[in-house]
Amino acid sequence: MALHTARLLLAVLVSVILLPLVWHARPASATAITVPVAAAETACYYVLVPEPGKKVSFYFAVQTGGDFDVDFLVSDPDYHVVVQGEKERQGDYVFAAQKKGEYSFCFSNSMSSFADKVVDLELSLEGEHESRAKIPEPKVNKQNLPDTAPSEEILYRISTQLNSYSRSQKFYHTRERRSFDTVKSTERRVWWLAVAESCLMVAMSAGQVWAVHTFFKGYGRGKL
Image (tube, rainbow, N blue to C red; front, top):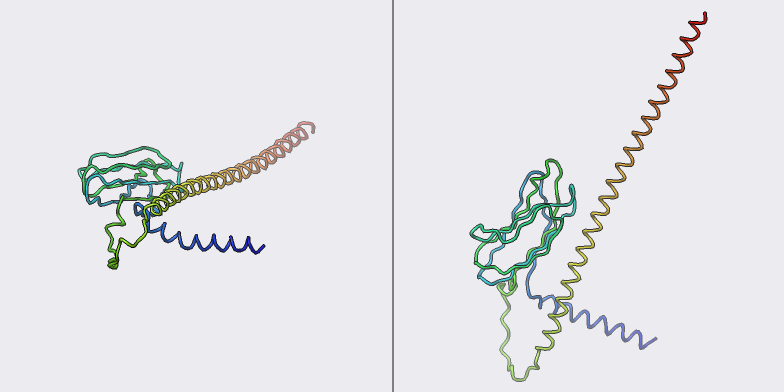
């Protein structure tokens, strides 16, 4: 029992130490936002690429609205099309910027005249975190420091795995939201169908009563 408790405490301690290191060892900085796209409108967002060759990645998923699809268009600073798609529910793309400047990421809901859409969007630029201000490192004798390359490689792999898990969680979360919306839509349709059937049954019953009453009323008059 004591050995199991000691192992558990050691695992918690290692997690507390490694998680901040993994966070700072990410190869790129990502920005995740929720984008509302109204009916018959287009929403655009921009990323500034400082130099050619930088990798830009973006992920999007339609969370609510209509058939859960949207048109998207990615353009470079000269308005040339980089990536585009129509009636896409979600996408995960990575491309190398050929030019420096402002890249636009636009989502169009022009195919819908009344249904608003909500899109989860994540934009990431390679090396973006390196351009931020850093605390100057103290001057130390680097010859006496241990080699940290293996540790950095391990942290990089852990970071990659965590990013993969994060994308998987977003994917399943999106599927859950869509399934829930489908259930709600089906529930509304079933309710209105039940109401229509009830009204139809009441109307048919009233029509039958009226027909029988009219028949016997006319039959009694003819007999007299």
